[in-house]
Image (cartoon, rainbow, N blue to C red; front, side, top):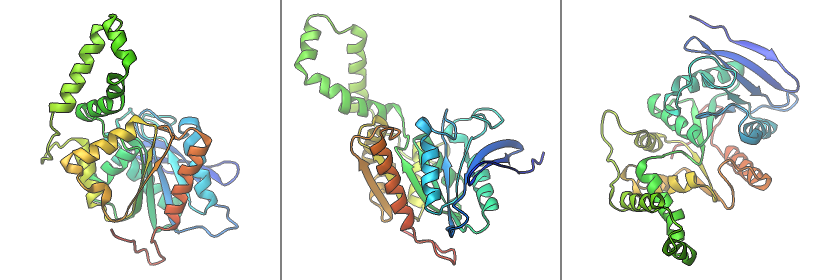
Amino acid sequence: MTLPATTLATASHDKALRFACEGEPLIGILHQPDPTRSSRQLGVLIVVGGPQVRVGSHRQFVQVARALADDGYPVLRFDVRGMGDSAGAQRSFEQLTPDIGAAVDELLRQCPQLQRVVLWGLCDGASASLLYLAERQGDARIAGLCVLNPWVRSELSLAKTQVQHYYTRRLVDPAFWRKLLRGGVRLGAASELLQKLGTALFKRPAMPSSGSAPFYHRMAAAWRGFKRPVLLLLSGDDYTAREFSQHAASDPAWSGALSLPGVSRFELAGADHTFSAGSAQTEMIAHTRAWLAALPVNTAGSIGHR
């Protein structure tokens, strides 16, 4: 079934879009720069991951899109199938490649002056963006990748993060031992601690393999194979960000990946997972703006390689 794309005019310079992904309608909002100003030849697609809609927590994706549109970048944020206003069955972040591809197509169709698109994603939206690049063999239309607190959850990564950033603090806290000696710590909690310690200390990372490699290994392969600029933003007060950093430092598939040329990495001290504080959001958007402004995309459509 072929579903025609539909444009619904809204106030300001935003447009509501209806476009197809494998015969099912997706709904998105296109933020267009002020028509009186020159529009850039680079667009931004905000990729929404798991159980999340195009608005984002505390309207985060709206604020990011409007800020970038003010800088002259057309920005599209959209609901993947099964979420928000889009049709279809709900899918995990590992199954969003067709949705992302349809949104890239629509952004380029709506803004024919664009030569390249940047993928911008938070948490499993960041992971979905990397998986898209892995499955679409890089997609030459993608000029860069902005990933925030990527999701790489596994039993081992979770155990290591919890042991390092939670259980270790408890073990050196005298109050914990006084509570333990008084019988104030339930047996289940003590058993969980021993289990996490055993996993963190003795379980080894899965080695990359052909076939059904775990998603975080496919992410690593895409990261290495993507020879274009990457912006990595990590929250200073977020277990997901810590888990990613620790995983990238210990998993052989990720060894050295964060230090590759072309990777710009920043940690925002005190920021939570969604940069909910006004100062954290301002800093996050400022990093994104500065990085986009420095992207080597020229009128001939060539892109910088790392």
